[in-house]
Amino acid sequence: MRNAVFTVDVDRDVNVAEEGRYDAASSPGKTGETAARYTSSARGLELLVNVLDELGIHATFFLEGDTLRALAKHTDVRSLLSKHEVACHGVCHEDLTGETTGICLTGPEIAEIVRESASIVEDISGRRPSGFRAPYLHASSETLAILAKEGFRYDSSKVKRMEKGRIDPWRLDEGLWELPVAEGKDAKRKRIVSYLWPMHEGERSPSDYVALAESLKAGCLVLATHSWHMVETYGHGLLDEMQVEMNLWNLRRVLEGIAELGMEFRTADEVVDIMVRDRS
Image (cartoon, rainbow, N blue to C red; front, side, top):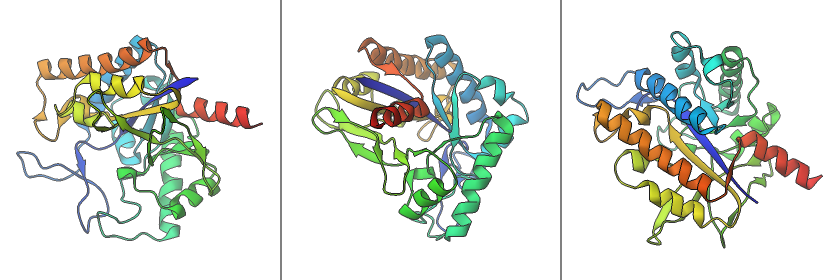
């Protein structure tokens, strides 16, 4: 069986971690301003959902708390995401390990972030999230143990290399299921990770990700992108309408190409249900 999970990190526009700064900044671009922005994420989210609904794909959205609050002021997020799974992505895109920011959070501080993140998602979406993806994919064993204690079912913060055409979720020592982002080879046998941001930045083609999917013989391929990346990039800033359309067209090529391989798209939570069922 081959499953695909399409995931979206819904976080602040072109976010970057800064040493000594607790919350993530937005890339300064031409203005030099690093205050958090959310307009690209808001527009990109609606464009993404339209594409997914058009293709009949149910996705998993990892929602950052501050971004979700900002979006909810102008968007009916509950209705927009009604066909999709909601999950957590921190509150203000914190570096939970301090690996980049140098700010080492305590266990109680991480637990408070996890609880607040879940509370925001539940309040706005109307559904209790069961999954978590750490900002920057920085999740320690302590963070994973806290997630398990707070009732989460799975994490998706690790990157795992495909081995002999297979990549499977697995049960972590902390009690969670791990649904890793995939690492494999493209058609030219070069390393590729299943985050789509290099494609949005003009560094990869849709065929690279379809080739990655084609190399999967069994298991689950987790793909990931950012909502804001539909309309803004690190390299080019805000995209014009023609660039946005090309970006969305490339996304469709990836999703349709994977579906044509006979892979079934599921939400992350649905994949965990399958894993639990198969072990019982």
